Image 1 (spheres, one colour):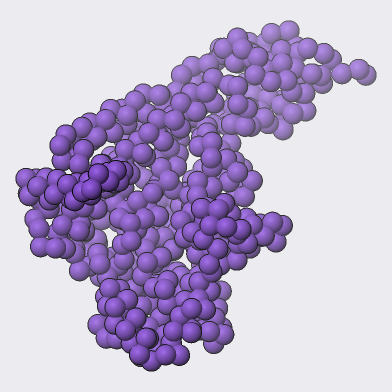
Image 2 (spheres, one colour; image 1 turned 90 degrees about the horizontal axis):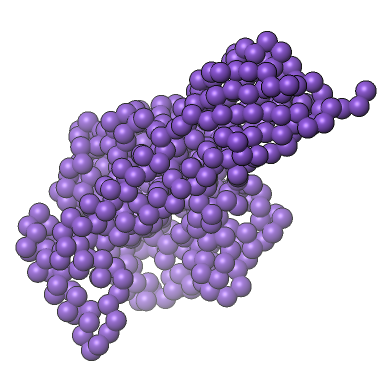
Length: 494
């Protein structure tokens, strides 16, 4: 084990720049291909929300293409469905790929596997079953050879996925895997630690970085960023984790809302986004607006010692989902991507009241206005409330998208069993048989089976609801004219 950890450490040290600098354009279709971490998809839900609020005039389709438990080898083996029907059928302009958590073979790590290896008979039985299910062609003779074979298979099949996507004329973005948290101190729940898994994921990450160079693909440094934040925060609080926030349900694998927000931040950082939602830059003495960013200012008037003006901004600030807001403490999202600046020079020294559309939203000094107030952090502005509504709608779109992935997951398994996932009647029959089996003996229907049943009994219903919500999101994110008033309340004493 020690030798393996030392070997994998070399895979962790070469973190490359993740910036490739090209935001999605109007009319793009963006698919997110991955395993359960993508199927749960809160990270690309935040990306959708960012684009809706930052670029309200762009029509961009974001499509969840995640399947729980998926691996690169399984995707290539079932490419006719998983790549052609489930991804390329959307005619994507861009496909983001994140895999590795299942490819690395997590059961090949930890103390228990070391003990099992000491019994050749037990090891051979385990290896034949587990490694066979992972897609390894030969039964490995040792734990070390099994781990190495999994990484080699991952490398081979990831290259196959990238090649097939590029043949479909899609631009490819590669995300290094999210982390497995070996170091959080967890009381209760799944506290078992599979030591070495995160090192294996580090080797997957290194392979992804090389693929980015070899295939001229975009790169998002998910793994490196999450590792660094975990290390920093666990030095303060050992129970901290980006993977479930250290709660009892933490399985050390699936990020919670905060972890997904960090992943979204990493993705947006790779695209070189502007920090500005908007920037209003006024001189109260001359009534001139200079240095404006993503806004127009008209009707500038002196109002006593203060000033008033009309403004239409080209974007809204992003309001994070409530359960993800701790992430603002962990990454500089506000500083780097959420600057809605109101800067007014030339005001007499004193205390001022800021009104937007006749409503008091804050009190600031002349010095604060001169350096600039970030309205994205002010929760009672009309723009913030408008954006909070967008966050709510985006959350509903995400939930429907995740539910729709249940029928895609069923079709995936159906195709691997020799069924035709393009035949709706065959799929319907198979789903209803699965429902009947699940309900045998009066058992309660599992939520994922219920979703599959609803999708085949009421085809198109969820899709129509999703499409309506996407239209509602676009409507909510349209920016409006606002009247700003900066009113002096008290002059500074000489």
